[in-house]
Image 1 (cartoon, rainbow, N blue to C red):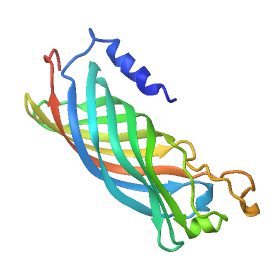
Image 2: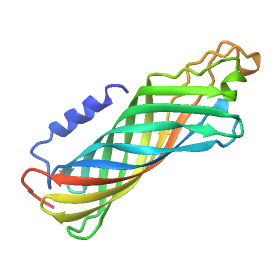
Image 3: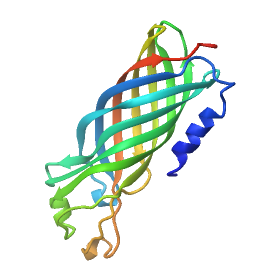
Image 4: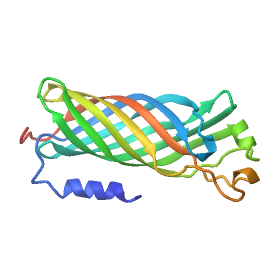
Length: 218
């Protein structure tokens, strides 16, 4: 999966004759509600970590209502739990390649589109400590340098002029592998094995987009 971004970029560049509409480059910022799931959480809910998400995206129409959206974001994930006194914070540079399907496409009124596709995130900072670590005979948790996930969501776009659009997206990210690489010594937690911790996040992003190139279709 680590090569999927290159494959998606290649796919976009392989269809230059098919591109309709205008590619759009956007800068965006939003709110990220991150939490965790997995065996180590013992099936109980944990408090979300509320953070900012910021980055850039490029939207590339392909044919009709279909296109690609490539995102690059700085995003903070993890969770805090005051009841069990633990902090897990993992910050990433996250890249995603999403299929963009337009459901409603008025030019001057808000449009509606759906997004879905894979993501890969590279760790830039992590912290994992507190009672959750100590109960597994560890001082701190250690986390993998990469995380893979699936993103789905909805978006809307308002076109203000030939040179500017406003985009709002609601996205849900589900991790598909454990980010934990700690080996536990506690025999009650599979001695010599790791217990899974997976990322989850719900984010709302507002972006300012700048279409470029000649418009060739709707």
